[in-house]
Image (cartoon, rainbow, N blue to C red; front, side, top):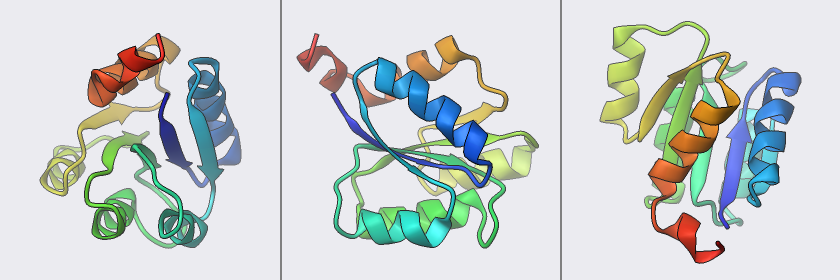
Amino acid sequence: MSTILVLDDVEDAAILVSRILKKKGHTVHLFTDEDEALSCAKTQHFDLAILDMKLRKMDGVEVLVELKRIQPQIKAIMLTGYPTAQTALRSKNQGAAAYCVKPIDKHELEQTVAEILGPQECKAS
């Protein structure tokens, strides 16, 4: 399966996403701090990043830009409890594959991750 970075400043939200993904067989690295997530991305390969839009020091799009600089191939899903057309457009323009509204439904998350990771998901099946 895939290696996924989950970044949300609300630890409970990050844990929930992490649990859903781990049950699907993914390796998940959970972060509540942007700097720690970016630091880890310098040494650990990630197939996918799931990023909250509202963080403590940066917003999710800024983190996405930095992740793409470190790992250009990384795919990303942006999560937000405050959706706007502007943040959706910024996310897409910086390479996010999906923009989802929180609270995200378990099945929506599983389906979105499977669609973004594509055939890679079938390898372990």
